[in-house]
Amino acid sequence: MPPGVQLSKRQTILLKRLEQLCERAEKKVLPVYIEEIR
Image (cartoon, rainbow, N blue to C red; front, top):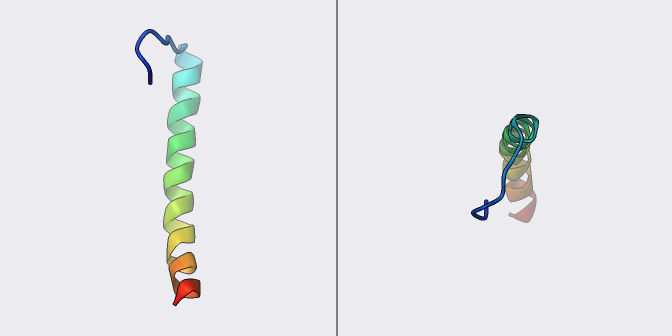
């Protein structure tokens, strides 16, 4: 986050949720992706 940017509480919650979704997606997708590369 650049300094001076103010997030509302709602935006902060949405951002956290988005980060969690990305983490879960990576954990599901990466192993499959790695298997396909080999």
